[in-house]
Image (cartoon, rainbow, N blue to C red; front, side, top):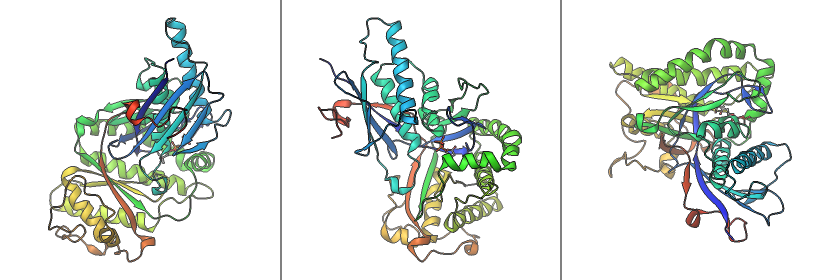
Length: 408
Ligand code: DP6
């Protein structure tokens, strides 16, 4: 008897034009389009194995080795049901294919980054889940078609079905059939686009994206302006900036859009704060770095963006990353002393000390304070870059389920 199993990995994505607000909370239909950069799976990924078997009594899922409940009618159940439906259609059209759509599935998923790092794992997680089932079921579906289903797991997950630069077109239909992800440009188009994730220590858990954005939809008038007047224009300008590899425009829109997202969070009643003093210190240093560069006749070098938490993601071209890593480590010296920066792109040579090289000439050091305690510092820096879409892995080597169908 054959085993029906597949293992895949899917990437994280970080939005430059933020999704914030749903017009349909069950189907997860957004109030505005959004646009993101997919990050390299060599550094950050969710790996997922899916198996179906007539002997399995029920659908089951393990996240990082721990069984997670699949609540009836919940997001996980919806994604699994929708994928089984697609398989059933495929079997009806291809009568020689094995009839496996009625079998229960077991799914095991792992992230290669700690959940404690405060990085969103729902996007890569749901993208990997949907892609694993699509691979298991041998479906001919395109990434955009699969994104319709991943979207119902977590909105931002729909963008992780593609590599490179990805737009989630909000659509207008009440059934959601036109609300899916499309690729604006592949990773190779602008491969020197790098990202530096600054993990900001955050003891308390904030408001979740799901509940936060709903409260914003219910109470923020500013959000209505954003939806109607701001995002449609930015989506067009951003797609052009990406196609033209125009970093100045890319960076300007990215920073303004992050700021507007945090402004609508503040405009929510009661207000929601995601950024903290450390986040704001990073805004100040990126702003100063850009100011000095422009004053010296250059363009912008870096763009910050923040999701529903205090972590910063800094987008920059590869050539400017060394200066940026040094700058961040200058203000967060604890980072340099404990080495939570892995120099995977070999920016620094043997004698050079991260954080101890001079800041650019003319840089006003007073824009931020040098952190002197762990609580106000950055706990980790992850240097990565734009990367490709989900991958099918060799199940015999990288599968997460053992012969009995439980996580290894
Ligand atoms: C700030 O996709 O996590 O990261 O659809 O409720 O699961 P749900 O929300 P989620 O929201 C992401 C919000 C964001 C911006 C973005 O990724 O576009």
